[in-house]
Amino acid sequence: MKIMVMRSAVLAAVLGGALMLQGCLVGAVVGAGAAVVGGTAKATGAVVGAGVDAVTTSDEETRAKREREQREHEREQRRCEQRQRQGRDC
Image (cartoon, rainbow, N blue to C red; front, side):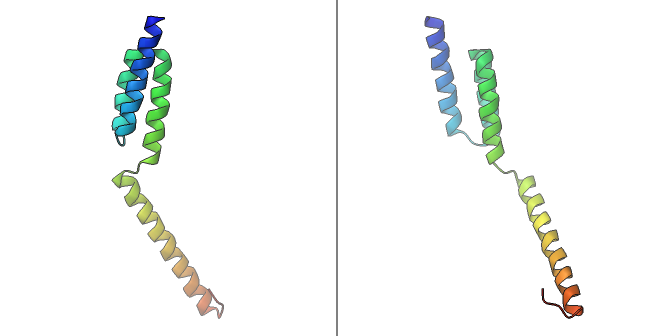
């Protein structure tokens, strides 16, 4: 029973600390804490780390999104110009 309480306290501390961190650091901290706590916590740590990583955006992802949006805008501009040449509205 004492081991269970100890594991729960460690898990709570790790998850509480993880909420204060940002980005990929969360996965590393939670993963390390999960290794100490045990098998069940590993799954929880992986889920928490993946969830936080999913809501953060890296510079590369931001750049790729910006480039994709620029290409879409240019494509729409070309379509609009083509419609105008044909005498139609955009």
